[in-house]
Length: 556
Ligand code: SF4
Image (cartoon, rainbow, N blue to C red; front, side, top):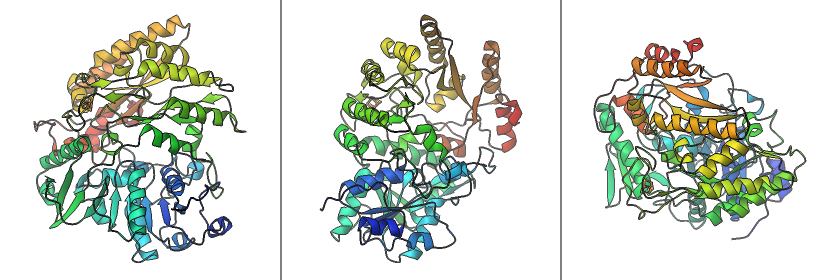
């Protein structure tokens, strides 16, 4: 493999391709987000990773979808084209919890909505097939990942088949894609096939030792089977086996998940020369970039396993963390930028305080849906004392005047480390700390796989104590959720009563949206809990609005 140097931006136009002296692309990535050359944007991350391994990659961001011209601009790529809806599922990005069209889009220049189609991964895959007949098309990103098997689609209120089949793609990459895309490129370059790449799904014949998920048609006929299939997919993420799901006589095969990147690999990935700017073709600032321009991703994965969260099925529960040296090097590089303003706006990941966490159990032996609830697993090891030290050391870097923790803090975890609690509250909270207790009802919290509410109350006390000791007036901003499956009007009254007793008016209240592929979406659809017992579900917009009104009367 020839090594090639990393350009300032990956090419997005024919002229840029020519300037680089690249005769053709090996891989074309099509994304529903603007091309922002920052490691928080999937196309840039995967594109630069491929270039670092010798492949020539171009990016087409937010192409027009009524013609193929934008895709054709850099010519036919040699190996494959990747299609991703972007950082969010396109339906989640486009519609509110009450299925109203959103008016803005944080991943588009100027925050304008309407720059990506609904069900973008399917639409882009179709465009690619038209533009480049016979070229392998690979789906990736969160939309593909969450919809890799038969799933409940809130926006049409029905079970849809695997997006692999709807998109007529050759391969679907699920989870974090670095290993799978390298494998895909290498196999295609060698003339090989695409079967069995860890972290991918394809249509074909199932190997012998395969766990069978309930078939799509069976789920459509019997909603309870959706939860069974979802829990099996969660198990696959933990136990790494082959899975297959029938779709009208065809099997969608899900190879075992890819191994998370090691610390050394993550360090190499984040050391790539991201411009941390939007590509010059972007017309206007990209709001999502403005939020994360000076933040550091410290780790991947989330051990929490909340039943409504897409992360368990995408990044998985195993934590992979960057080294202290890598984070310090990135922070130092940020301080040398002309636009640096002195503040590291976040050091975190899916959660703020799981950097360095690990599992002491034998790999593949885990049977739990969460490492932290209903009570912490004895095999779970956190590294919050070290994390506190890491944050302090980043703050000592010349030019870093402030460091904030903006990722969501797992409050149950934070209470395990007085050193972390002290550092977080006294040094790294900028007046307000976002926390997600989500609810107060024990039954609802159990269904969410969240810690008991008394743990949140204990955190509030510790937070107030530490804030007083630091002489700071600071607040916790609680994230709360209405209309979760199993939640009743009485549960909402209880939560509203608790808030009223404290004189709190919630600013961050969300009405539950069933994200495709999650256990909570299956509970919503089937009206059962994880043990198959019937639960009440606020299903109609009227019922959901009524619950939500307990938290946010103005939305009712
Ligand atoms: S810490 Fe416990 S719950 Fe978490 S992965 Fe390990 S064994 Fe499973």
